[in-house]
Amino acid sequence: MSREAPADADMVSDEELTELLADAEGTTPEEIERGAAELEIAPPEEATVVDVDE
Image (cartoon, rainbow, N blue to C red):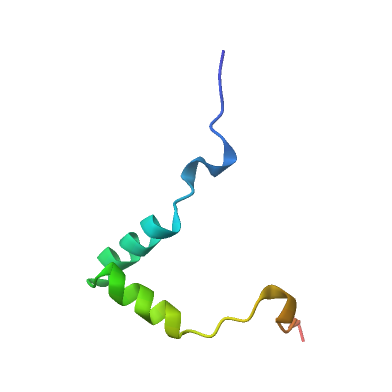
């Protein structure tokens, strides 16, 4: 009997992602969070759709 892992088995939490990014960048999770807070990210419903084939 074989069982497949759930599709989200490779997913990481926000905290884990922050720690991985900090480790990869040689910084602290706090610095990553401060930098992310400074970014202005529009919600998907306000995003501009761009056709890259034009």
